Image (cartoon, rainbow, N blue to C red):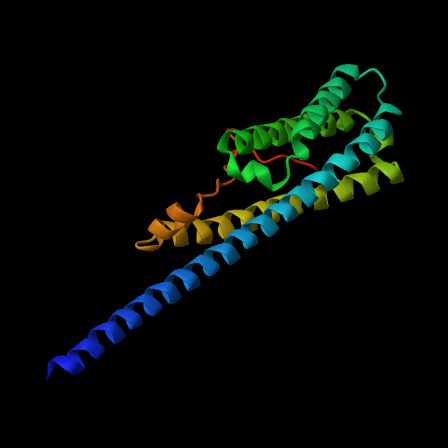
Length: 201
């Protein structure tokens, strides 16, 4: 092989290496963007079902109040828990970038779930309330919403797991670190998860 052909081979090899590295970086980056968008879309679904529950609560409380007006402590607990949950409800997907905010969101939703559970336990003492069509409809909607919350949280966790795994694998972790792709938090079971909440009677 003469020097003339060697002068052409080296630049061609370097060009192929540069194009290959660029192509790999571009493909990996675009995949991370796609996975990150999937996490954000899944998070939006979680927010939607929590918002649905949030919107049901005033009607549920008012219906129960009509039959159990003296249960003011329970109503206050539900109202305060709803207020706390409302304070973190509108954070949008920014909560995903801050583990502390995500923890506060999850804690507020857990407190609201507990307060709702206490409200529904109170209704056990009022058979005429349990026969009320409006209450039954609200109860069905709440039960369906709680089921949706469970499903959407599971979907979110699975989407976040796929994204987190992808950005942590070698050598993608270098591209993720350079490009600002951070791991997403997961929903965790509440401390009292061993006793499942009862929303049906």
